[in-house]
Length: 241
Ligand code: ZN
Image 1 (cartoon, rainbow, N blue to C red):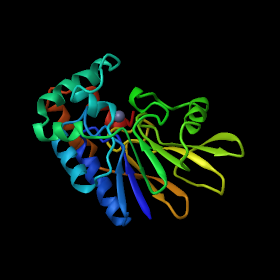
Image 2: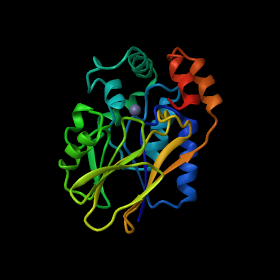
Image 3: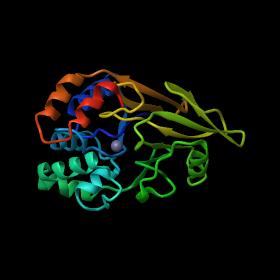
Image 4: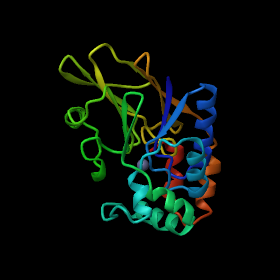
């Protein structure tokens, strides 16, 4: 089975459509969304509706829950908070109701899926260091766990009692190995590469690939600049930061 995993779309409809087109070309059997469908971008309702129409496998991100008041926003920086408040005014009652139904974790194809961290999904902790990855790998039993949240695609592999970091684009698990995979961000990459990021997981081969897809960044930037959203959310898209 081939599963496509998308995360951190952040109301970027152009990037989302480009990823769905690539997922269709790859003939993925299933799609999982790791949350943060909204926040920062100009198209919150279409993004939620497109994802909802494509897959029942969706977990909540911190922005999804912040917009509907399920998660506190004290730790949000000013731009993120401004985007939360703007999105709150835009989101349809139906989409708000849908976001409220989302779980924090789900399991599919022998893997675990969560927005931020498997050890404490509701705390929205980042997993960036080997030490943090080791702690997280001890917190779940599945062979693989897919996360987003940092917008930085990378592989943390548990191999012979050690945890090692491997850079994308791909990794294959050998017998006895486990991994924590950050799939990167569809709508706001922060690894210096402006192309949309998502993962393809081949469950039989134990193989994961990070795929990057170009989309019309200028159009998305101009759409954001036409709103009262923070301009920083528009400018950073071209830099991938
Ligand atoms: Zn995010």
